[in-house]
Length: 73
Image 1 (tube, rainbow, N blue to C red):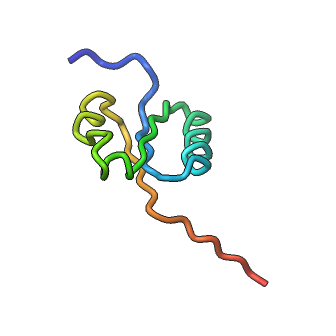
Image 2: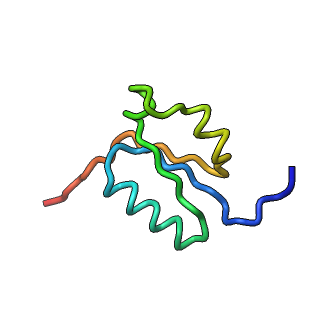
């Protein structure tokens, strides 16, 4: 297989658009090309996880289950 000439790919798995956008933007600033996917699409069968990985071959995979907001008084 020939080496890829494009930026490294980062698969981002999260259900919230604002989280995907924020992480994707940060990754783009560091030279990555983000590839988003929503866990619900995988669970309900509208997206095949194996096919997603085979097609995109991400260099890194980010899965954020839950972000907690902690506020101090």
